[in-house]
Length: 253
Image 1 (tube, rainbow, N blue to C red):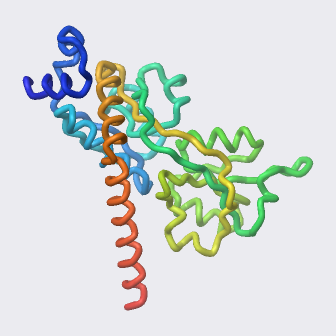
Image 2: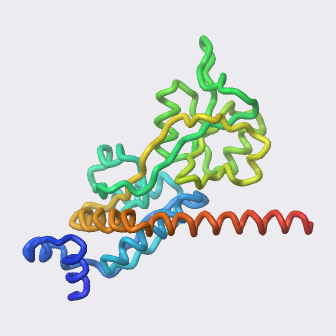
Image 3: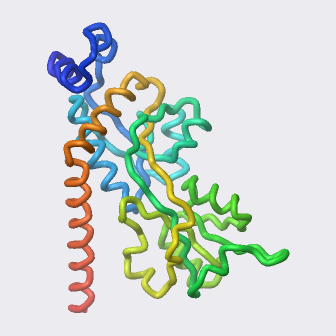
């Protein structure tokens, strides 16, 4: 307990009274995460380092995106790994950590080159595959007047494109980590200019609201010290090695 108080004192430089309010920290916290999203690995490692600075162990539980949000909101887990800023306005039980966690882009993918499918024509509206529960994709598709077709995985989204069930897919790239790096998407066309750019924030259930500011300071410290960039570089290298091994396995087959 004293160790956690000392960490907070050095990190925040606050008065003894302010530290007393946050001294009673939990030993560990569990967060819901979305499976098969490359950016998840980066977010988990970055947050694990930030929580470690507060003497807290981060654990995760993989669930579908929409369920992850519901579990975080109703308190089944201690929060949500990352979401867009608007989530804090829609879900009052969730408290946004005020320091940005990751930057991301939303890309449109089609079977054909060009961006003509991004807009409708008369009564015709493009059908777009979006990952169920990925709010930025759902919100963007609705704003553009598209017909939403929900998918439960990125593999299913790619299949919907191949089968001609949709005209487009909206896929996120988080800090240059994207499902589009998988070779299964190589035959499809990515529209060069992102449909939108957005920032992802970490969320806590309101019972842990006292951690939001200390955690924001910890994330800022990781950023300013260069540790965030080093973590991102390690994660990117891990994915590159995995891609290389997959290519070698395919050659052996």
